[in-house]
Amino acid sequence: MDLNGLIKDISNRLTYKIYEKTLWRQIKDGPKPYHVAVILDGNRRWAEKHGLPKWMGHRFGMDRVDDLLHWLINLDVKTLTIYVFSTENFSRPREEVDEIMKLIETKLSDVLFNPEIHKMQVRIKAIGHLNLLPQGLRNLLKKVEDATCEYDNFYLNIAIAYGGRTEIVDATRKIAEKVRLGKLDPKEIDEETIERHLYTAYLPKSDPDMVIRTSGEERLSNFLLWQSAYSELFFLDVYWPDFRRIDLWRAIRTYQSRDRRIGK
Image (cartoon, rainbow, N blue to C red; front, top):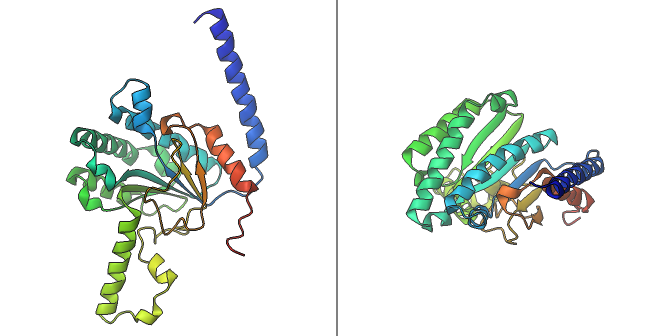
């Protein structure tokens, strides 16, 4: 790097730090969301942009999840739900799907013995049609869930082999079976009944206050369809592996500026 390049790099770093401090002063005393949900989008396009195989974008994206987890815990946000892999994603090329599954398995192996996870008491749970996953990955997910099931300081939900419509269908089937067995009167079915049968029913607060999607796409793509009915939506024009703390903080700042009347 020549002298001009070095000076420019130092200037950019200083500007970033100043802006970061300014953002922090703006959000630190404002209301924080309890539950943040993130659609980790743009991994493949990021890889293509850098001349890498598509699945490599997911590798860099998984490392970014570690950062996000720490940033949210430092903000005293209690729940994070990440959209890792949808049921529709199984239609991608077999080689890509296999590589993604291997990456997830490797990451979960690290998480299982990560002292920070246990120190911060993060409860981890996978939500979705887990029977669609490789047996080894399912076994590992069970180990991670069992190892963290007693924690309640922070909740990390991994939406994998997940589809929002499928979740609602599954809940409906469970409710219908209870009606068939005479355990539930159809007249008693209300919104709370459905919520008790969703994948997220175990959470203290299943509805996310914020849903963030990266990559510039502006749709939910079958993610938490029931739970996000009153969520604040944020669509960021940045690929997930490039997501920064200031991107999160800017979203938090906008969240704090919105009047969440929820129909009142």
